[in-house]
Image (cartoon, rainbow, N blue to C red; front, side, top):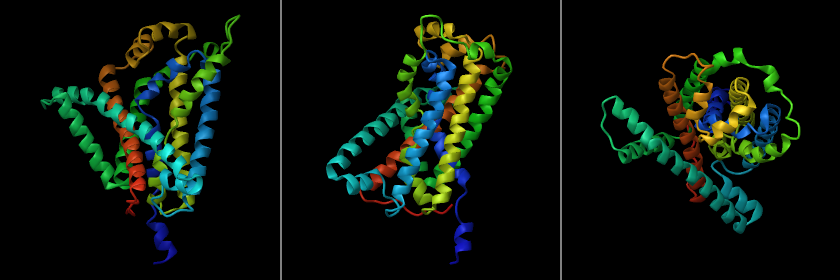
Length: 322
């Protein structure tokens, strides 16, 4: 088989980028302006740019290291070889804890949401049944491999972007620039709040569990993987910047303490933005957006967890056809 034939069969960079963006941008995006309100827009913008660069660089470094090992080698193989069995065990426990907790959280939180939606369309199902059905559906897609995940991720990400524009695009035309770039009140500083926001920003660009699958998916093609990571994280950054500009540009900083006191969730934030939003069926569209956001992040996290377990148990990652 010639190199030209192999190149033609190489999956598009687009599919890998959608896996990264779908994993990174979940329903937690809505909490960004609430968490960042203390640091306000200037620091929020700087922190997002810095953490995007740091997380992209760390992902590229992990990818380059992975290319020196057989395809399917993940955190466990690399850490054990480079740092020893003790560090590999500690690293494995931390990864299992993070991805396991996220997987549990998605199942636990999503069950009632999908139960309510299914009941509305005439499908009676319990909360436990909805959780089991959702878990089995995600497991089936993940079992099909990176190809199946990428296709579903693409649909979810495009749907999220379209809904975001329909829901909040009008807010961009109402942005109050003086409020957005306002200086700190006398006797107050923004930077202490920024220190507290930094860990949240780092977590908002978590996608590294998916790199092992991408290395196998692109058959170790460094250029394709690099472009997928760059495009996926850039698209995530653009969505984050769009959202904090829309919210902070329409709500003054003084409005956020009340939002936090009332829970700081998406419902409270939407209530505060209600006079600026002129969208029909807002609740329905928000519900649809949440469904797509949850399923995309759930898929990404579960795929990363599956890749880690496969590497830890020595299953390897099968070669997939695009």
